[in-house]
Image 1: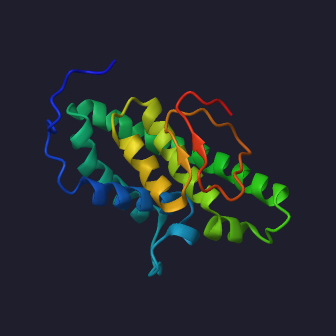
Image 2: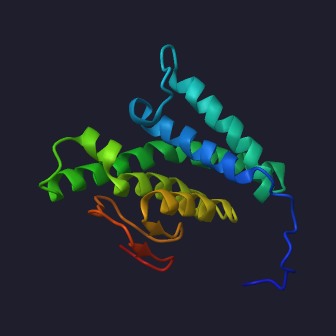
Length: 178
């Protein structure tokens, strides 16, 4: 239900967009450290990647969730969901590989396909959407949209083995079930 809030922002969101992008990048590096990890990855461990992602997430969550206990719950649930998100993304990679005769490797999909970029962000944002985190999931998918041309609402329902060939102009709305 929409509120009758005034047009001016009720909170100070200065700097949040950059923090959201950092959070996206750090979380993707947890899922695929050899693809999205830091370029100076010597000595970088999953534990250090996880700590970095958690630190930025703890910085941005107060913008959207006031209660500390609720924020800690969201952090725990997101962390626990990462293996499942990774597993589902792997099926998306398989779908691209088997469905596109122009692709030559899994690495090519992860590095060069806008679909994989958009789906990676969507699957993380979708989990946050399911956890009732306000605004943040939409910011994440809009960032992916600006980078890929693929607009996926974080509330959409998208199963495993999903692939979008090319993608510019693709819109998947909140009520979509794929």
